[in-house]
Length: 298
Image (tube, rainbow, N blue to C red; front, side, top):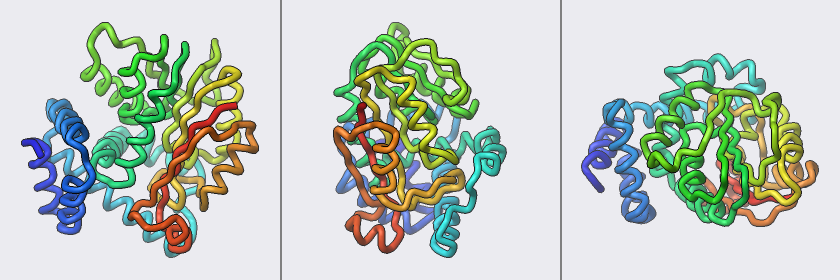
């Protein structure tokens, strides 16, 4: 590990001894050298505005909130909230909380085993996408959006997110990481369901968004309507994965596939990983979180 990464891991481990063993395994057995370097670079950029102590605190907040929501889910068999209204003010329009939440999630992409694996699949898949117009729905902290823009396989890149905090964070993240001649992107605070689309998109990325909406079928239909005849669509969906702002519960991979096929898409490729490395069958039985990613087209 490098200097800032060492400092981050030490603070997290001191505050949460369970994380010490887990993170040792992640850095010893899973993260590649390029991923370790990417994490260090992220910390270098973020540390211009946030201290490593603050970033560690954001990550620990994410873990604490996840454990709290998991306890509720196991005890009640459902997510705590079921409507956008319930979580909008509490999370998306709460600038301080949303920023901390996004920071925690950004770090989890390099510190959680399941997020590392699903991110690798995204990077592999997005390299096959090309065309004129690219859209990401819910870019959040901007990690995936940066990956797409950096590849330069499209003429235009648009990101739309409900949260102004996410838009601000993603804008900063991309501007800090891209050269001046590579910034052909636009990030918009708005609702994809009502935003006026002038031309169809050739590709869409939507990572862990369907579980945040009350009617995911309508969102998938919207994507169908705003894409070209043979688009490339990347979506990822967590199953049995409680978080404070998850409101639609997918209980199995079949739940997701049924919805995808109902809206007219077909699956080109798929990937899943369980949160603790167990089998899918055991994960379903024990209601352990599963991360599913799909490459779709019409």
